[in-house]
Image 1: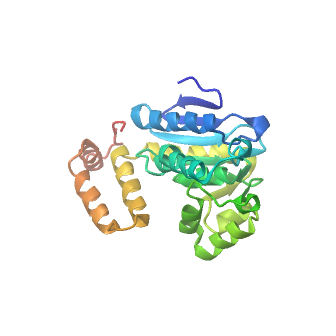
Image 2: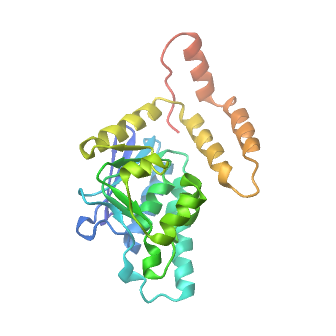
Image 3: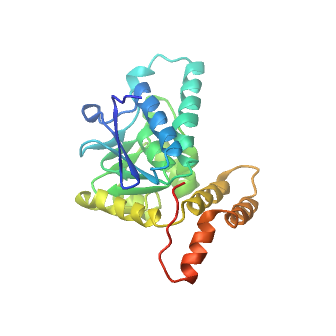
Length: 260
């Protein structure tokens, strides 16, 4: 697929995805979501990709929300279909990815932009970034998992306040309440993000995937997360990464894990 709205490049095992609509503050329109869905699927299938760094073009915005003009005349049925499709192909696909996604939040992350960042497994924000879910100012609510993931990350009270006041928060506050992992000077954003991903790339990819699956099970209704952990733990004993990791440990050498 040829991309018009995102940039995609693999470097040293990391797939860099940049939402490239700087003049539109990287707003998510249908074409951009379709390209993101394709890039996420590509990451899962390509053995060269060990992890993904997701960011926005320019210095102003990570993603400043959805392209409102595209859905301003939607019916309730069309609105529901929009949310359901986006959830399945982009947001849930990222959260359930076997490969870690890190959001490098370089500027405004609003509405669908914050929802996109929250779908990622790790978030690093520039100290100049601001975040929020302003949908109620449009007579809407978040539709790409915002009500669920924000509550999981910061708790019911803070999530409810952010959503129904539509107030933005700073990167410093986002770090303090657990919405992002780190707030760093803007010039250090990519360096810090790459530092985290480089650590992950040294670990056993099959174990990393198993850990993501087990952590995600915490939030699945009707699923016993302890049981998921036990099964994932057991499966690790049957893969080559475990054999390589143990052999390397016992022979006092660095492990050489295979790509997922």
